[in-house]
Length: 188
Image (cartoon, rainbow, N blue to C red; front, top):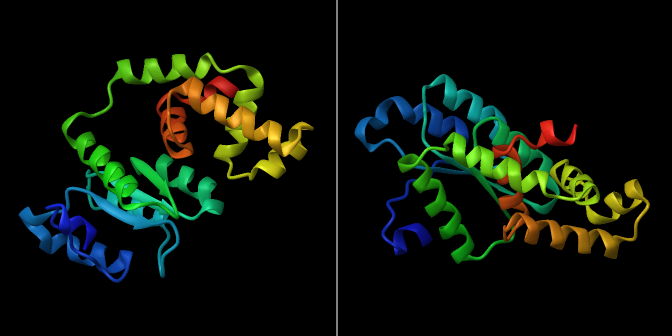
């Protein structure tokens, strides 16, 4: 209903398998963007993405995730999702995420974007890199604090600083930037 209220045609399916089954029959009505949850009956988001690739589906996929599923959302992005959004989210955040995803069909990532992302990540101090790496693994602040011998409040400060340094407004945006800039190579 939200998407339709802003003029975006939307079709819902009871499961990923139902959507995959409908793909061959969609023809010109093929989805411009897919919004899915990390955890679904029958198939999770990562397996759905693998099957979409097998169907030669090259449209953006956005994954919704609960707070504890960040590492799963990262795996989904590595499997081809263009973005993820953490629950709970407000209408504006969801619409903004979908809008960005739709823009990716018009402007695919370039080498310049990858280089800019890598440069922003390289500017992170080592401690902020360690925090980002653990956030991407789905660890909560308390676990990161234990791993790094810090207080949870200090982890929160590092998290806020790394988001500011990367010029992003959310963990989802930081993860997207980290994947775009090949963060694993930088950190390890």
